[in-house]
Image: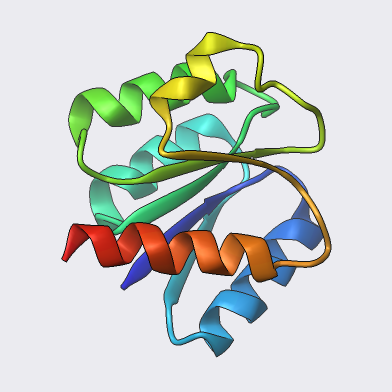
Length: 117
């Protein structure tokens, strides 16, 4: 199973990559929206973690573009800020505020990937 991690914070990318690879996932990472779209098309990830605040494109717009291309791919919106009241994030399968404790995120990924099979 392949995870696309979209986050402009290199520390978050590295943390997620190490943690998810320990869980047995293949991980590809993007630092901006353009790179994320290219990897989404070329790598065909099974699931995406998507930061809302990116340097070149709003993560919510990116969510819409990804869902138009492959609506069945689960997307987890992640951010350091609380956007739950923004109805646009409701198009994602899950939403979470970033934390250094990745247990909730790992559990969410397992649950969402389990629903796909």
